[in-house]
Image (tube, rainbow, N blue to C red; front, side):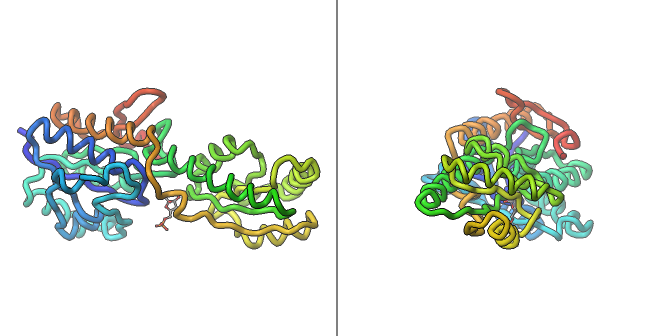
Length: 300
Ligand code: F6P
């Protein structure tokens, strides 16, 4: 019989994580299961930071971005001694199953726990969309955040003759940049280190000469330095270019209706799977449906 479930969020926070916690909480209340939040992701698991999640924990916060139980990137969780410590804490606290919300690093952590006999389910919470689901929780909100921010930049640029090089999150995964670019109707993109500078300059000149769209170049983080690229483009295109780093504006903020519904229903399904003893799976969206996939099939 399942009496206690624990939940943690790991890696970069993603809007909709709180809705997922709410989904898990709602199903736990329905089945008279106690829900514990692990404060600070895998680090909290190592340091035994469990706290019961109640209505008060969630009250007024389910529609906010970030994670109400905090997150971490845990280099310690790559080491056997700390993984063993975390497993001991799960057992000592008599936790029957664990729900992990996060990206690919979080799934790798979940695999370690599963291999040690812990019942674990993961939900894909990351703005990067770098997992084998059609969407991850937070991706839709982050795309909308970027589109709104670049629209604002364009408003201002349209009054001047400036161009802008905007750095977009996503690590090495271009999904966030590409979906934003589609919505912004631009093909001024840099998604790899060996991009074709001459062709970019040609496209910029054509856009700038037509003058119906402001010149905004979207650059995937870690690919090129925005300031350097802005300087090069300024020299080659003969008008001013400014670098712009959007940063955490992309990751924060109130989740879209899509991410709220996604997080909530995935949370409910996680508890259903735990009750039917179908653990060791990642639950996420494929097309219009929530599906279960083995962990290894979700990591790109
Ligand atoms: O994984 C989400 C993400 O926002 C990436 O797009 C980005 O590279 C990274 O997190 C930034 O992480 P941090 O906030 O820890 O620097």
